[in-house]
Image (tube, rainbow, N blue to C red; front, side, top):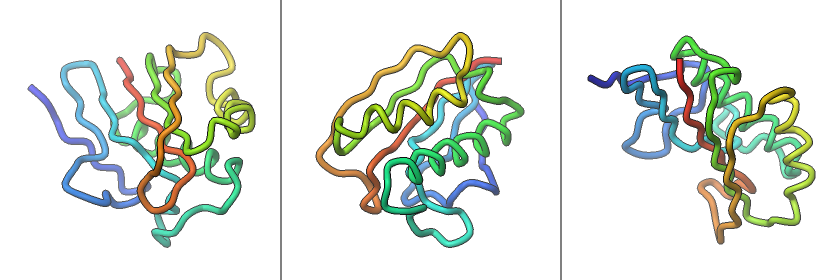
Length: 125
């Protein structure tokens, strides 16, 4: 049995998808880009500003499911420029100070809304 998770503090979906799906004790999030929920606009031009917003959006989705970053077991990060990896990684590390989850990070040609990064998570209760 699965349950749709909708996070009121995350940006509205840009298409026909849910913020996340809770299947049993496992949460599968959709990718979050750095849109500010209140405005629907990018959080800024820098990777640092965008990384902070992506993590805030994911935190809202996790919270809506009764979870936190402590529940995350896997992340996938999409960057339009792997040259931004170190800056993104420094901000990412603030949410996973101990026992970080497994992670994949790939460079992609383009992301929705002109974002520099997108991230999705898998979390377990």
